[in-house]
Amino acid sequence: MGHKHHSHDDPSKMGERRLLLAVGVNVLLTLVQVVGGIVSGSLSLMADALHNFSDAASLLIALVAIRVGRNPPDQFKTFGYKRAETIAALINLTTLIMIGLYLCYEAIMRFITPEPITGWTVIMVAAVALIVDVVTALLTYSQSKNSMNIKAAFLHNVTDALASVGVILAGTFILLFNWLWTDAAVTLLISGYVLYYGFKEIPKVIHLLMEGTPEGIKIDMVISAMEEIEGVVNIHHVHVWQLDEHRNALEAHVLISSVASIENVKAALKGMLHSYAITHSTLEFEFSECEKSDDCSPCVNGNRSCQD
Image 1 (spheres, rainbow, N blue to C red):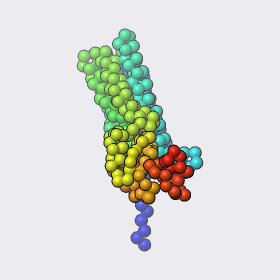
Image 2: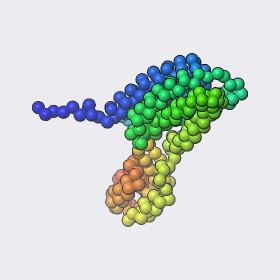
Image 3: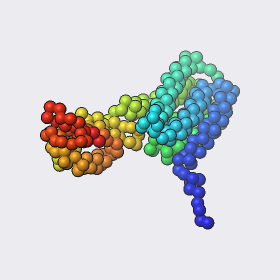
Image 4: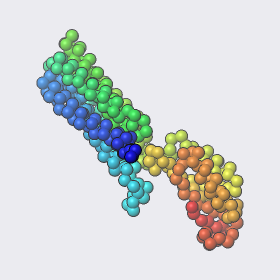
């Protein structure tokens, strides 16, 4: 007695259920917006529907990436599959930028050739969309803080919520003043906002995929800190990169004064690297004096080396 099934309260499973719910709601909303856009003749409503469909797609991609990323390392992916989420973020942000560019084009064309719009239909459908967008954003907000993947999907939803606000304003101006141009103007504003966030976030994703130095880590400072460890003579051939969003890695050659100090130096270095959030390190030890050791390579030019 007293046995509890904690799996039902697993935060990751709850997060996945939220994403799945958000996908279903956004697909349904997209259908409503398409019908409303066709009936009303509103470009901004159709644009909002297109963006909303991208929201559903981005959430689905994010969900698939999470499940793929959970797979353990194997002989084909020795570091695991966590970068699937980074790839998903790249896909979602690239899609966001493409949608932004398309909306710019459509808005400009609508300025050139205005079309009649039914204001009330626009307002009602956009109001429903706004409610759904806000709910979806709330479902993904907590997860977006620690994941590029979810953040990219979250940005889709936030921009879509703002788009819905813009569509409501456009419909109101059309009803009150018959300003048909506001539909294209709002579409242009939506596209500008979409492009701003897309171009702001995508460099971070590309930097990770290019194995760039993690944000907040200065290689010179890391090397200096490593060289302050007792027994370390010199640090060279240093590489620091991100395995994924939450794991940093380092590779370096460590020249030490004596083979006898290798274990102490290794422990001190790894402890120090953890303070820089570097949890995975590969250190190749070299010795300034040639000493006998079965674990190390033969003497070459007076130096001996071994890896850890």
